[in-house]
Structure formats: C-alpha cells, structure tokens
Image 1 (cartoon, rainbow, N blue to C red):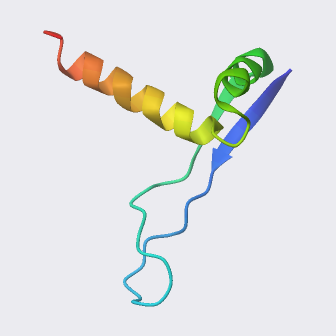
Image 2: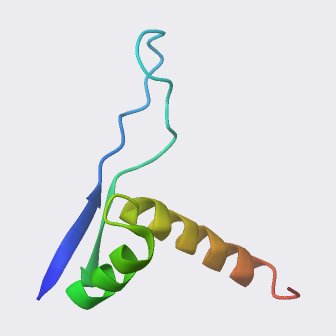
Image 3: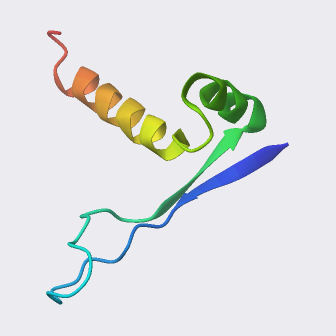
Length: 68
C-alpha cells in the first residue's frame, strides 16, 4: 500500500495583502507507507514535508559538490 504526499503551498502573488510568496511549486511524490511511518517515527507526523524538503536539499548539495 502506498500513500501520496501532496504539498500545496500558497500561490505566489504580487498582492501586498496576506502572506508573502513562498517560492514553492506543489508536487506529488509516492512513498511506500513503511517509509512514511519510519520518517514519522523520527520527526513526527506534522514534520513529514519538512523532512522531505531537507532530505532533497541535502542530496542535491551532495551531488552538486562531489568533493564533499
């Protein structure tokens, strides 16, 4: 069984009212339920998206800088 993680940030806007633009684009990723359960056991169920963003950023930095 797989669940779908969907991240829906607020759209960027030039309207001075409300929240400032977040500079994010929504995307869908599919992860096995076991993976999600392991992540939630480490960081809590309200921090899943933050964990995924940080993991992706760390991997991008690792691949972009092979000398590390």
